[in-house]
Image 1 (tube, each protein chain N blue to C red):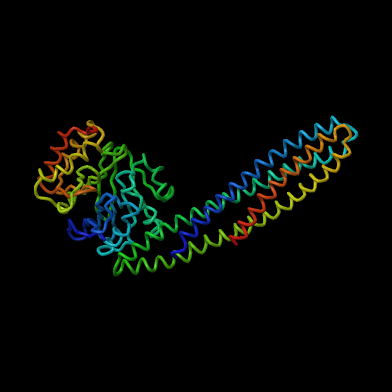
Image 2: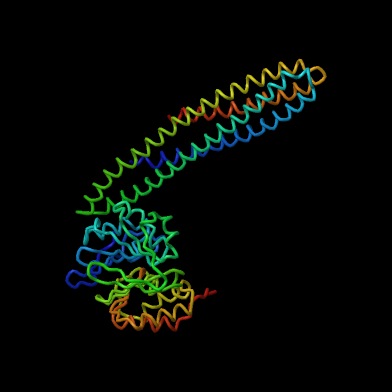
Length: 203
Length: 246
């Protein structure tokens, strides 16, 4: 029982860090969306020579939008975790007061507290712990799905680099844009790797 | 733990004071909690803060079955009054808490839901405990803007919340006191600072002067008995309140 408050505090800090990482990815996904729009305009200006690049820019924009959607679901999920963990922290605090009450009570009061704590502990803590475990499993699954989506983005960025080589007079500008895509998506991949590591440690 | 002291008993009608925990940390203000019992029914007055719950619960259970606590009265919204609410609700989720309508949406931050609270209108109301009718007496702005005291006409006891409170030094912290002049020195600073309105003070003095009070039980300090009650009302009516010294 004594381990519960520490566990919940650690769990809450972990969720806060996860949420911060998710915010970083959301901001980056927004940046990719703007970059993709600029790339579409650039491809239009380049005309015939950048047709393939234009198609890939459209795909990258769709990717950025999918990523934003995915990340907002992740944020909702972490919010759910915060609610559950907060409830657990509150329960743990009540539990500490009840433990003190048990120590101070004698006779009827003591046996009443004993009985109450037994029932309460098995019901509330078990339920909250199961909720947290289920949330963590779903969070891990969603991070894995997001990593797959980002892998697709990475492939698109590499293909855009190849297409940029055929961009004629616009080749240098298109290459610059493709490299920006690749670097930004690389940042997201690193964020997701760190999220995955944190999740693996919690399971 | 605190001590449960029966301060009034007439057949099945009883007042129990839960007072003076020798192990109370000095950073927590001392508080008195009172339980009014009539037959099997009861009302716990200003149940106290989260931190004193163990002490209140253990003292209370020496005199009364805590499972039967189903009504609480909070004179106002302060944490030393009602922050233990969530713990009482753990024991009995059906517990009802009487509190000024002004605080009925603030105090749920301590616990409870829409069903938990019974809002007291500004003019006060009566509460039935067993076969006894208790009166909730308005005491707004003394010190809280939504504040009530409780009068028991059978026991002739007025629970006066923060009015009459005294911050007693060690060694002078008996539940009852003898020398009024000596005692009231410990109440003066508290009343000057915590009581915010001269008008509210005069209204209250006028209102309670009309009641037949044998005992006035504050939430902090000692209980006033007999003539001490009249002397307190007189003293309070002449005290300048709502000021910061220095």
